[in-house]
Image (cartoon, rainbow over the protein chains, first blue to last red):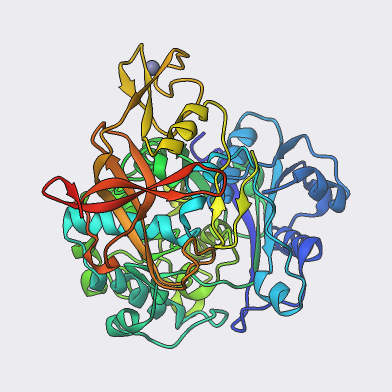
Length: 383
Length: 145
Ligand SMILES: [Zn+2]
């Protein structure tokens, strides 16, 4: 599967106001059209679709009749899973041009009174019986518990977690569409109110409107298209629980499995990575990725992020778009990991562009540290 | 089956498949655990089969009712406040003496006193239908405080 498929088109939309004008299917189709235009392809080329709730309704809206369809929903990592499945399907000859798309507008929905009630939980879902009666706040409380366990086990501090938010904000300062661009300090993070202790408000991702799409095709077809192809060198997924009380070890995510499998497929390791796009729903989430993907040993994520190591100028650039912490986070953020990784590998990121990156990792995290999905992406030079 | 919200805004748990003995025992404030006879191991949450071997021979045994805090959070801005007091409260994963982990609350002490590895013992919060919800409180020298 290595380098048999490539991402050839991307699009995303977000705004410093946190709100977008379009919403729903209208916004999704606009993203699909923009990503196809970016690729130099048209709607008629598409024979595969990915969507987190209904790839069938999406295809109907687009007026197409795909031979590959994927409605997998693993939460925020859904888009990395879609890309993995699409790459496998393309390599197997099931289809040739796949689009994946996401749009969500929680912020403008709320202001416009369009807020849909949270879908009723399935009464047979064990979380209703065994977790929600205790007032478990989702999604924050499970991540806060993971942070408490990491702190107690390894001596990780709130200051170290705050370093991640500070470094990410420095990247956001170079993204004109980021929700928050003003620099912050460790003290600012620690002075922000607790949401779920030990996580402060500035340890938590935003709630904004956002949308994005990717187009993937075969390596053969990718060579003749508008933009430099970004190859899928490795891809893997693993989940080990759905609710937090069933997570085997709150300091180790299934990203340890997805990461090592994706790196093995790519024939690469953490030392080869020029950019990590690691899902930052919370600061602790990103810290766990650094350990589980092997950028540092288990338990050493705290010291690793000190001194701006993931900030502009640091040795491991992480979340150069400003991340879910400062750019945008519409609910399921994984699409934006892919879009930024592709743009960096193309050299199209303007002020925040890294110097000639060749390998990027997009590492999605879904539900409550439940489902991790890792994409290792590379330029033509890595093939 | 369906959860119901009481005036205190607590979501009252339903009784899922295989969990009847657990909830019935709470009527007498007794904590019981399902054990797989093939594995000779307890598991949690209750279900009609063992999550290790899928075996269906389950024996219910009383638990010691003691454990330690494995992980916790102090919720400062709850969306659903089971205590209806608007005050910070503790949600914790408690590792029972038998080795299984369950989500619960730590009550009976200021949130600031809760820490990982704190010894705790079960205590009971009445539900509207005669059952009780197991919660935990710190123990001092083996006795609930
Ligand atoms: Zn068994």
